[in-house]
Structure formats: C-alpha cells, structure tokens
Length: 338
Ligand code: ADE
Ligand code: ZN
Image (cartoon, rainbow, N blue to C red; front, side, top):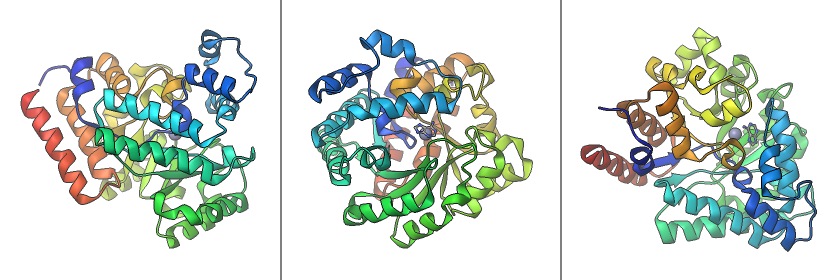
C-alpha cells in the first residue's frame, strides 16, 4: 500500500476517543460568544488570539484554555460549541466520537451542570440524527482540584447519569498523580460508569501504572511516556489497553520537539494499542485528519498503519458491539476501494 494523501486520510472512516469539547472552541466562535454574553477577552481580534496560542508546556496551554472557556454561559453556547465540532467531524468522516467535558470549569463560574450537559447532549443527539455520528460522553475531573471536589461533581452528575458513559481525569498532570482520585473513580465505577484517565503525557510512566492499578481505567489518554518502562510496555501490550495519542498536541505542548520525533508509529509496531486523536484541535493546529496527515508527512505513515490505527480505535471505543461491527464494515469497505 502507498503513502496516504490528505484526501485519502480525510475520507478514511475514523473514530475520535480523545477530544476535549472545550478545546474545540475556535477563536471565531469565542469572539461571537464573548459578544453574545458581554464578556471581555484579552485579545482584540481572532489573529491576536491565534498568535497567543504558543505554549511551552501543558500549564501554559491550560491557562489560556480555562480563560477562553469563560465565554461559554448558556445552554445554547454549549450547543453551538458542540455543533461546530460535529460539523467538522462530519467533514472529516468521523463516524463515532467520545468527547470529554470538564463540568468543574463551568460550575465553578456559577453555570449549572444541567446547562452544560443539556447543550452538549442536544448537539450530540442532533449530530446522530443528521449525520449518523454516534457518541459516548465522558465527564472529566480536573486533577489540579481536590478529590472531594471531584466527588461533589460526581454527585451533581447523578441526575444526568443516563447521558454519561464514562469518567476521565485531565488538567495539570505533574504533582497530581492518579491515586489522588482513587476514591472518586471507585464511586464512579459503582455508579456504572466506565473509567479512563490522562496519564503519561507530561507525567512519568509511574502515573500510567497508577492509573491502571489504583483507578482501574480501561483506557489511558496519551500514555506516550510508557516507552520509558519496558515492563509497562509488556503489560499494556498484553492487556491491549488503548492509548489515545494526540500527535499535534504533543508537539504544540513540547512533549516532543518535532513531529518527526513522535514515537506513535514505533509504539504501533511494538503492538501497543495506540490510536490517533486531536485533543484540543482549535489550539493545536488541526483536527483528526490533520493529525493523521502529520504522521504521513513526517513519519511516512503507510495506509496499512493508518488502517491499524483506526482498527485500534474501533477495538478501544465504548460503542455497542453492533455499532462497532457497522464501523468495521465502513473501514473494510473503504480499504477495498482505496
Ligand atoms: N485538558 C485539555 N487538554 C488537556 C491535555 N492535553 N492534558 C490534560 N488536560 C487537558
Ligand atoms: Zn487531553
């Protein structure tokens, strides 16, 4: 099989498993919502906002990301945010999505949990009706806050549990190891939720062990640092734990100095269950097709490898077995033609 073009990668049926809905806020929509809600921004225009998106590490990014999220106020704002991402997903032939949302970013500003989840879910439902894009929703706890605040958030989520499939853990990783949240993850599991966590993005391989052993997660978000620990690599291969990688994010946040140094294809060849995702596309320079395309441009991704990366997303997603089979057919048919 030959090297895939952008167009081939764009038409490839895809799944997104690591996507922060707040990270899809494009500067254009940010300005529109700021005006709608009479909120002042620290930028005069879209170009100035984009110019500010230069980060040396995760925390640099998070500072801007949390500030921008303040423009999200009403149910309609959350709808518009999510609807814009769904349209982009449709353009890029993404057929199943599992977005994260960060309720604490909003409840801490006096926005109700119901406002946030209603707007997001109304758009997700419309996306399934209009484009057939299926979804699961993942509620993340902010790891720079306390475990008791995470437990309060889980309590707030209780009336909405039928809309939530899993919990995750995001925000500042260093000095906030997974075990800090073992109780709330255990409570979430008792509530019937699936479990995922960011680990090994900036934090060490030990955080991946901890997410597996102390939180009992089914997927690791990022996990690039796994390669530092051979025993962990063996464990991840044997258990087929999905690692939801985000190449453009890793370069933008200086986890890797350049795309050509990214280890995702090395991990794939080792037999790790890595897949491709966009994390916070409006801040990192591209959505899922652009992430695949970076691998094609800088790491000579083959069509066979692109197929395996999507296969890993199918295997690792939380869709029903019936839906997984449907997506498998879409992928197999595409590869026959392409
Ligand atoms: N929140 C949004 N993007 C994130 C990332 N890449 N890591 C941790 N928390 C995040
Ligand atoms: Zn992330």
